[in-house]
Structure formats: C-alpha cells, structure tokens
Image (cartoon, rainbow, N blue to C red; front, side, top):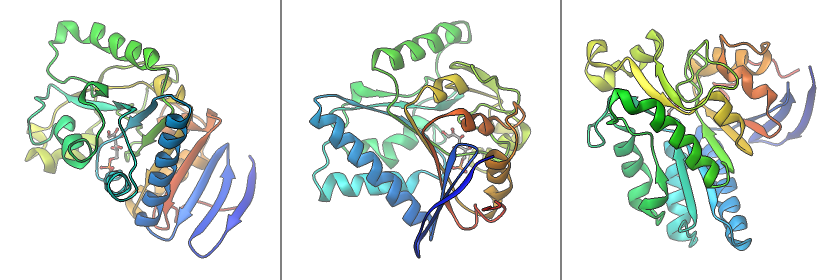
Length: 269
Ligand code: F6R
C-alpha cells in the first residue's frame, strides 16, 4: 500500500493510496470546479491537436455542479464543445427518453441544452430497445466508443453499494456494456424519484467495468457523509467484485475528488 502526501493548502489535501489519487476539497463546489476546469482544458487541448474529445458522463446528483461549471465556462470563457463526443454510463430499462426520470432528459436539462455539443455526438444507452435486441445494442454501444477512439476522460459518481455506472456487486472486472439487475439499495435510493419502490425499475443498461477501465482518465466525485464508508472501502479495501469501485485501484490515471464529509472515514496515512 503506497501512501504519499503530495500537496496541501487551505482548500486541498491530496494523497495517493492503492494507485488512487485522493483529493479532498474544501467543498463540493471547489471539487466540481476543479474537475470541470480539467475537462475544459482537455477539450481545448484535444481541439488544438485537431482531435475530438471523448467524454464519459454520469448522471445523478453528484456531477450536476460540474455540468453547471462547464456551461459557465462555455458561455463566459468561450469554450467550444463542437468537437466533444459523449457517452453516458447508463440508463434505466425500460425507460422512455421523455420520462421525468430518464437520463436522456436529465442530461438535456443539466448540460446538453446549454452547450454546443452536436446532437449526433451524444450517446446515451437507449432504454426503449426491445428486450430481444438489448445484447446487440450493447455491443453496438461498445463499438461506437471504440470507433470514437475510446474515452479520454470518464466522470463517475459512486453508489452506496460501491457501484460505478450501474455495475453492482458481482460485476466482473472485464464486463462490457450490458443489461443488469439493480441492487435493492440502489433501487431504494432511487425510489423517491419514481414515487416509490414498486415503480422503480429493476433493470438498467450500463457500460461495464471493463469499458470504464479502458478510459484514459477516470475522475470519480463523491460528496457527503453518506458516501464516506463506501469511499473508504473503495480506496483502502482490497480489490473485490463485492465493491466494484475497488477495481479502479487497477487504473493508472484515476482521481477521487471528495469533499471533507465524503473523505471523513478515510485514513490519510
Ligand atoms: C449515474 C451512475 C451512478 C451514480 C451513483 C451516485 O449515471 O452511473 O453510478 O453515479 O449512483 O448517484 P448520486 O450522484 O445521485 O449519489
């Protein structure tokens, strides 16, 4: 286990543990702004190289401030996102794109309606596919990521089960985009959005762990006390399929951007 304090100022404490660069910010806003700045810089760098920038995107409450900051940079600092290509991690199944809980709708409202990413460059797993066509569809999603050149930077949140995307406990390290069953904890965390557990989907389409690990950079955000136990387990625990986020320890450019509450169970030694 490697532990190296690498940087410290009033707002940021950073160290490396099990290959994960852990960055603890003064607030979720600071953490989100830092990750958004990195994404903006990467988009500009790729554009200067004449290349598109391929982003893997997450939904949920955690990345909302990153998207808000990217919209601000787009508007106030002239960040063109015309050459950005996006792949979202997941979508409930089945799910209509215009439903209140749809991740298509979420992404439109939180980011896509406010920036200039071409609609044709946006990919979100399709929750309307017929059950018979899901496997083929998932293979096409993997193919589309490969054709785009692979993901430059994958944004992640983390669920209380240790899921990344909807890769629940039991997911394999080399898993690909597929239809999965959601855990009870994940469904109960989502139940409010669906007006109760009975209405909450049991299935989702998600990028696999292997898909996520092929991204060139991975930036996981986690905020709040309720994430602290699973963050500590993911960073300090041994790699196991019962906590899929522990697989991130095997990636060579992964950072966790945390607020102090989410970092509160971590041992910074
Ligand atoms: C969402 C996703 C999930 C969430 C996780 C945390 O696209 O893939 O893994 O990132 O469930 O959700 P929030 O941010 O709502 O706590």
